[in-house]
Amino acid sequence: MAMYDFDLEINRYNTNSLKYDIKRGRPDNIFPLWVADMDFKSPDFLIDELISKANHGIFGYSEPLDDYFIALKGYYKRQYDIDIDTSKIKLTNGVVFSICQLIRSITKENDSIIINEPVYYPFKSSILANNRKVVINNLVNKNNKYYFDYLDFEQKIIENNVKAYILCNPHNPVGRAWDEDELIKIINICKKHNVFIISDEIHADFVYNKKFNSILKYLDNNFAVCSALTKTFNIPGLQIAHTYIADENIMDKFLHELDCVGYSQLSIFGLVASQVLFEKGDEYLYELKKYLWDNILFTKEFLEKKLPKLKLIIPEATYLLWIDFNEYNISDKELKNIIINKCNLWLDDGIIFGLSGKGFQRINIALPRKKLEQALNQLYDGFKDL
Figure 1: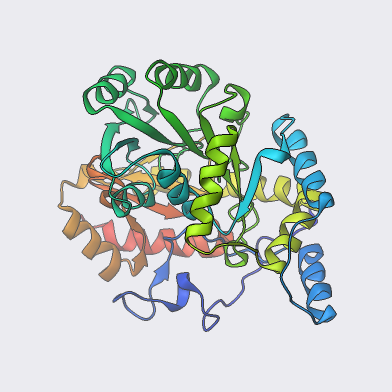
Figure 2: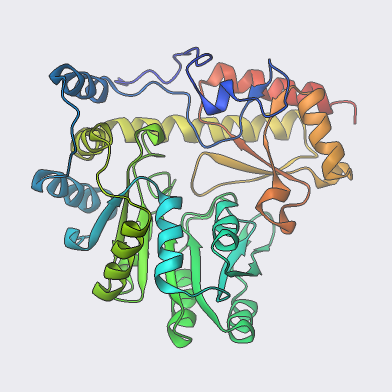
C-alpha cells in the first residue's frame, strides 16, 4: 500500500508561487504547466523536521556538519552506486548559480563554450551573461528519440577553440538519460581537445526503466558536477545545491568566485531539508517516480487517442514532456496564441530551448492525475478543430 498521496490537490494561489501567482502578462486564470515545480505536498517527515527547526527559534549562520556529508554519501551509494568523495563538494544556493561560477572559474571572456540544443535555456543565457561565446551542437532527432551528433560536436570544438562544455544529464527538455557508451564517446572527444565538462545532473533521480549514468563514473579530472535535491523533492525555495569539483586548483578558483560575489553560508532550512531527505527520502522517491511514470503513460495514451497529430517524445527521464506540434504546420507565434488563449494553458515554448525547438512545447506533468486530465482536455479543446 502506498504511503504517499500524490492525488491530493493543494491550492497554491496566493502563496508567492512563481508558477501560480506570477502571470507575466498571461490571463489570471491560466493553468500553469511550465516551470519545473511539482504540485505534490512534501512528505510529513520533511515538514516535521523543518517545524522542529523553526520551533528552536534561532536562525543564525549555519554550516553543514559531518553527518550531512555522511547522509549525502549514503544517498549517492544507494541511488547511483557511486562512492562519492564528499571532500570535493561545495554547497551553494543553486545549480545555475554554480554553473555561472564555474564558467568564470575555468574560462576567460570571449572563450567559447559548447552546448547541445535544444537544451535548458539558462545554459545559453549564463554563457552570454558572462561574456563568453555560445557554440551550438544540435542533438539529432531520429524517430522521436534524440542522439548526440559526435562529428559535428568535435568539429565545432576544433573550429571554435572551445574551452568548456555544459552537459545536461539527464537531458532537459528531450528526456534522454544518456547511455554509458554515449557518455564515453562525448567524454573522449572532450579529453582529446582538453575541454572542461560541467555536468548538470539535477534530474538524476527521475530516470525510468534504466540506470542513471553520472560522469562521476568515467572521469577523475577536468570536470564538475552540479546537482541538488531541489527537483527530486521539490524544494527549490530552500535554495541548496551541491557542486563536485575534481581538481583542487579549479576548486580554489571556484571558491574565489564565491568570494567575489560575497557568498558564504547557506539557509539553515536548506541544510536541514537536504540532510533529512538524503536519510529518509528513498521510499517517497520510489512512489513518486511510479506516479510520474503513470502520468507519462496517461499523457501518451490521451494524445494517441485524441490528438494524434501531436508527437510525444517518450522520456527516459524527467517529468517534463517534449511534444512536437509541427504537424499542425503553424507558426510558433500562432501556436503560443492557441495554447494560451484557446487552451488556457501555460506551457514552455520549444523555441526558448534553441532554434531546433521550433514547433515544440514542454509540459510539466508533475501534478495530480485529475488535474493532468483537466489540462489535457483543455489542450484537446483548443486543437480538436485544427
